[in-house]
Image (cartoon, rainbow, N blue to C red; front, side, top):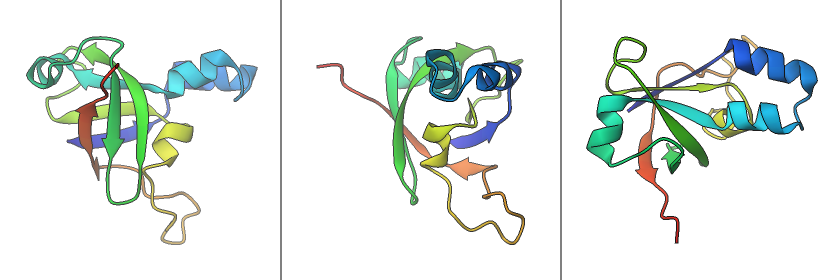
Length: 112
């Protein structure tokens, strides 16, 4: 699947309260997934999933989004520590790691 980390209004307002506050941690640890993809993957809102790529991996919770808000095959997560675990350190001279259009594997984390 394709992961697109980015800014969100909730991420921005929670950042103002502090990166170590529960609100910021919750916002930046919540992955948005197309509802049809969630059904196909056997996921429900609040499930923990592991995202991984050739750079690293992270575990986050997921929430469903309608296909009018997020196309099938795409994932969105607000910038934060979890998304940083999947980004290469190469910035191509821009100062910002390349973080758009990352191919990732998603799998449900067993709750046992």
